[in-house]
Structures are given as C-alpha cells and as structure tokens.
Length: 495
Image 1 (cartoon, rainbow, N blue to C red):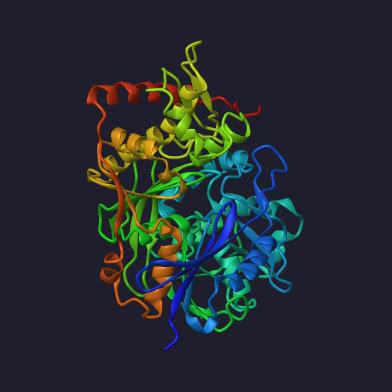
Image 2: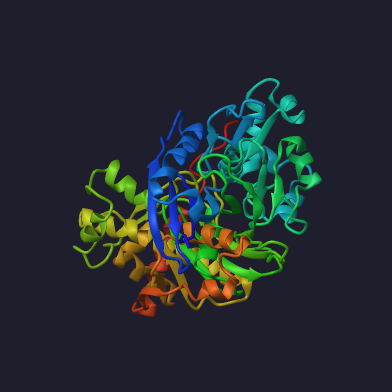
C-alpha cells in the first residue's frame, strides 16, 4: 500500500513553504521559496500575490511525493494581508497590502470617530487599527475610480492569502475563507461567524466581493493544479494554526509563536471572552460542524524583525544567531532598554502613533548591552501580553508553549521564563504553524481520528524554568513600562 501523507502550504510574510507530514506528525520533507518585499513609501509594505502563487506551483514538485500519496492539503497564511483580484482573469488588481502596512493610519482615525464606531469592536472583537483587513480593503477600493462599483457587481474579489491560494488551486472554482481568517477582517460577526451587515455598511464594503466563510477543517474542494486531484481540507490563519499544532485544545492552554512579530494565543473555550485590557478576541479554530473554539490574542508587531534591524541596519552582527553570543558577553542590559515601536505598538497598547526608543544610554553601554536589550524587548512585550491575558481570562498562565525561529535562542527563552515566572516549553516538532494546518486537513479527511490522537504526537524538546529574583523582576519591569510610555504620542496628527 502506498504511504500516505498530509501536505501543509505555509504562506508566510517573507516566504512560502510546503511541508509533508506523516501520521506521527513528523516532518518528511520541506521546500521553501522567499518572495520579494516591496516598500514603496514609508510605512507601506506590499507583496506580489502572483509571485506567491507561482512559488506554490514551483514548490509542489520539490516535495518528493506524488499527488496519489497525499491524503489532503491544508493551508495556513499571513492573516490580514489583503488581496484584490479580477474574477474573470484571476489577475490581482494591485499588489497585496501586508498586515504590517500602516498606510491606513489616517483612515482608521476617521473610522474610529465615525457614528456607530462603538459597535464595531463589540461585533467583531477587534479594535480600530491599521493591522486588520477591512481598513486595507476600504483603502484599496478608494484608490482607483470605479473599483468599488466593479466590486459591487462581483467583478473584483477580496481575500486574504488562503482565499487567493484556494482560488488558484481550484482553477478559480472556489472563493472561500475560514472562520479564523475571517475573524481578522473586522467584517465577521464573532457570534454568527458570518459577514455582518452592520459592519459591511459601516466600512462600505460590497458583500458580492467577499468569500464564503467555512470552518477551519472541512473538504472545501479538490485541487486542479499544483496538487492535482488532492482534497483541500483546511485553512487557518498562521497563529491559530500554531495554537492547533501545539495541541492547545483545552481552555487555559496557551502558545506564543516567535517570528518576525510574536503572537500569544490563549484558548478560552467555546464562548468568546471580550477583552478589556487591549487584547483581541478571535476565533481559535472550528472543526467541521463542531462548535467554534475562541481565543484571546496578544499581537506583538516587532520581535524577530528587531534582531534583523540590529543585523541589517546597524551592522552589529553578521547573522541573527550571533545576537545570543553577543548578548552573553555582558551580565545584564546595563540600564538600557529598547522599545521597538517601529510602526506603533500592538497589544496591549494599540498606539499607532508610537515610535521606537532606546533609553538609559550612558558611556558604559556596549554593543553587548544593546544586544541584550534587543532580546529583552521580546521578553517584556510578552510579559505585557500575559498580564493582560490573565486579567481578561481570570486564569493565571501556568505554562507557555513556544515555537518559531526565535526559540533557538536559549538566552531569550530563559529570559521569557524569568519575566513570566512560569515554565517555557518547546516541542520536538518546531514547525507548529504548518503542523496545525496539516492536522486540521488530516482530521477533515479522516487521516487522524480525533484531537486526542493529535495530542499524543506532541513531545517536549526543551524546557526553561524561572530563576530570576522577584525583586529584580519587578524593578526591571517597572523600568520597561516607563520606557514604553516614552514612545507614546511621537507622531502628531496633521492639522
């Protein structure tokens, strides 16, 4: 009998990967291609959606498995990145506007002052921010004469990256999204899990251009290209996929993915928890006809990209891993703190006008102290999110599961354990985003029987235990919070 596998398409911010997993959740093969980043103006970040699709087509043959060996394909993606394309030709109307893009700052301010604005967060669980898809979509519709009218006639389609990939995989037959990605648009009602007419009217978005909303794990259709004949069984936003891949299936279980940005999600069960401390209420996942599972999310904009800035813009290290070696040349930060509000602050502050600061500089500070402050910025931002999460959920975090590229930095992981005062654990399979998409697709086609079977695949690879003195922790956190306050109000609104 031919061995069967599940393939995950992981469409990320800087690259696209296709990964093959076996029944034990072990990685069999991987292929990856980076795509170009476009920065046409300050604060603007764009991707070429056609290039991204072509990359998927190129990656599929490099996996070493044939379509008849693949039980299902699951997709996970950068979530809020917004694509518009022509229904007839399948050609994007413009470059995709990436989740990091802040061009909608002034638009978001106007929307937040519009009558009825107070209802938006109540319905969708999200605050007004440049981060989410609806303001990006509104901006794109306004950017070209006649585009809104074409969208109203259904001639122009909207989607986040999973919608774009499924459209292309099925030869333009399916225009769908899943509840996790839809929950990042500001257009989906968190209770009904459908596009909300009140929200569509508020943002003035034509219903005809939106994809159908489905669960995270069901057979959407069959691929006709890249993986011809293979069932498409799942779609999840990347951070929800990581929650699923980390098998955080019970309320109170949490994970944080450390990458370009970092994203901490806490499973809150089958009822949405409304945040009063600057977090996002989002859909964690929905398996077929089962009830949805919700999550609280703390989104941190700049973590791994701060290390990249330290490497590329300052030139103080040659490769990203060197930052740990440099940081270990000193015992502490020397009184220096870096708050990386390069494009504002996300959770729990949501201050789009904030900009980054380096504080506490003296002639004593070396590049080692700066390296340590770069790493510590990720730890303190995690602490801010966890404090907000504990307050919102009424639960005290007891363990944090971690994944992503930055978890290879042992000094950083120890620091995070120290500032949270809880164990930090990393699984054997580090590719939890891709694994979550594979798990959901496998469940949809019966490749795996149930959630408990998936949990048995999870194994611990490393653990860090807190060792910081409580007094030092409190003093350092206070210093960090004072540094954060200095970032507020830097960008003044234009008169």
